[in-house]
Image 1 (cartoon, rainbow, N blue to C red):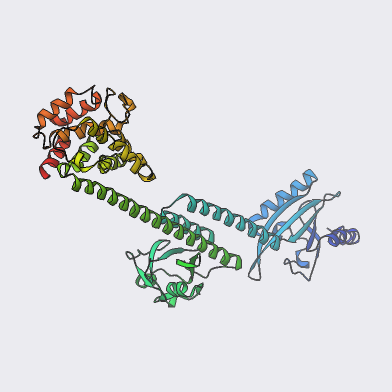
Image 2: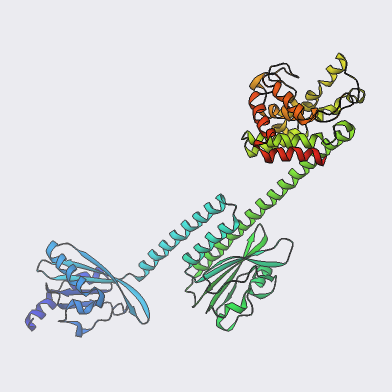
Length: 505
């Protein structure tokens, strides 16, 4: 291009108008991408350009990695007559700067290229993207905490998010022991060397101990020279960590543990990064607190169940003490009932109620007078009326106890008969609850093979024949069939259990 042409561009260059609208750098190129003019805001120092850039290709002006792309975008702008855009970054004065170049074709096949610094906009976009990811991470962690009572699993998943979202090399969680001033290692990720089995540190000792005791964040930036303030100093020196944070985990005003974060170079952090780290620490504290509450609840439930069972056993023993003739009867008949129920595929969660019902089957006899209960002769009709009230007494006694309601079938119905001739309600066939039908077989069998004042003990063979003869009358035929097979040895283990119960007693 000769000097006359350059002067014409200088006189009629559209850059002046464009430059008044857009701050930054404005270039003018011909259709081949040769720079013929430029305008720049000197105060902004946005981009390295000078008079030497004139008459050079626009390719030389852009970073090496996008030079071919630059000409393609320029050709596209000329071909379509529409604006095209290109984003790129440069390192200026040791700082990464982001730029957007807008290619706008003119009527004379020239291109006006407006280059603006969009670093601040890019940082805001990055910040928004990061915030969005962090919010989504917190939602995921909330769901994990709400859906799982497995503390180890919950903390493991949480730590993986800590490492990924905060872009650190390693992290671990220490949990404060119950009723002890010790922090115990729970879970960790990102370490190259193995962690010792169940290491612990005292409150106030080391950085984690101080963070927990003083309830404050501790930040160390020279770990390469410090290894003695940690849970596992022998191996820490091999990790190459430089930067470190200890975050106290506090829930409901109480310290639950410490979150430790490690990095092998200085962490590029800002206030938002630190706030998110503390938020994750809060999530970890909630997870630990929830797990501990659940654990306490389980222990309370177990202790309560044990107390109930001890009470049930106590009632049964009290009845045995009152009625010496049936001593050990409860234990034997319970064993037989449970084995027979298992052979009939009664679910495990129902067996516990059958066990309790079997133990309490005669609890209603507490309401029967001693002169009737201990009478050696045959009871009169009036006495039988009183004796047959003991299933109702059991219902009246145990019914108000919600814990025992699933176990009432045996105490209330175990004297009902398959043909409807039993008591207290005269139920027939499958109207009688299954647990009571099973128990009835075991109860009569044990009664027949036990000595009574009014008769001697029957042999096991004689008792089995009697049970078989009563199938369809007193007992459910199906249950009798299973009982017979069990006693004949097709179920050797069951027979052994039953026979052993008699021998031991």
